[in-house]
Image (cartoon, rainbow, N blue to C red; front, side):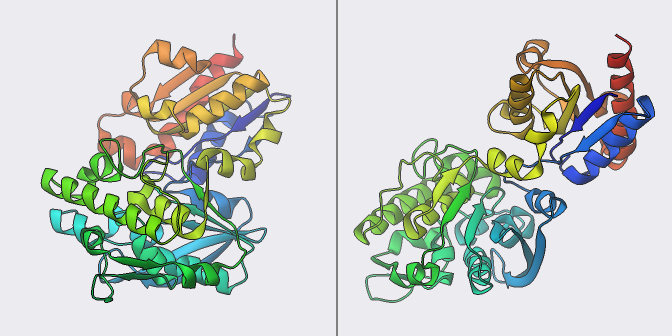
Length: 374
């Protein structure tokens, strides 16, 4: 009996990783009715992570928190085996704003702190913070303030929220936030290696997609540098150049400095909970995929992570994606024995997005039939 492992990430704008795995499984079943199928949808710590964790048996917790601007948003996190998995974007995601230069300066992470605080109040034994897709560039200042930290200006007044206020920070008191955390360990899950400041920092690299023009990028970068120094003055480590500290607009750096967080690969952490490593033992084929397979997919994203695992296990790999922007050499380097882009089999991009499940099923069936006939 042929054993097939199905381990896709989300198809952004179309399907969650769980829904993508279900569609691919139907295609595999069309081609090989008697196949032994193991569905292990994965995530890299960004959008869609909570759905994957809930599918793995986690408990979903819902609550209303302060969004990245002034409105409250309906947020959620997942608790699995005592660990609370907090997705920053559920509180301050870019989807909650219409990005403008103003929002680039004013968006904040207060709601992230509320999620962390709620998990602590429910007795979480560990906190895992995923940090992709935020609208904010506040270095995690809002998050820390929501947990009780004091962030003051030269007149001992709270500075307010948003990355644009950080240049006014004169004093930070981390004690209340650390006391609230107690001995609960915090892990930041990210595969981004950007430092907090500089040409590869949070403002320069991610600011423009959050509405920042060059003027705001320069202002935010200087403000983050000032924030980093204020944290050092408060007894925290210097996060300005730590790899990964710039993730999520610097919320990763705020967690490192203020909460003593450690950084771990988002994909490795989440994949370890989905059973994919066990499923690959003795498998004949593994199928992965995501919405857009491009150069970024080669560094830290789910397809590259699954490809590495498949290679170590000696299992042939297939990739399905909404679009594929890698050449044959790139695919070969991943060990791919078959691939297909949905856009190549749809009359338009909109059709590919709205009919992604049907297309995934059809393309998976075709690839598996071709592979099985060899």
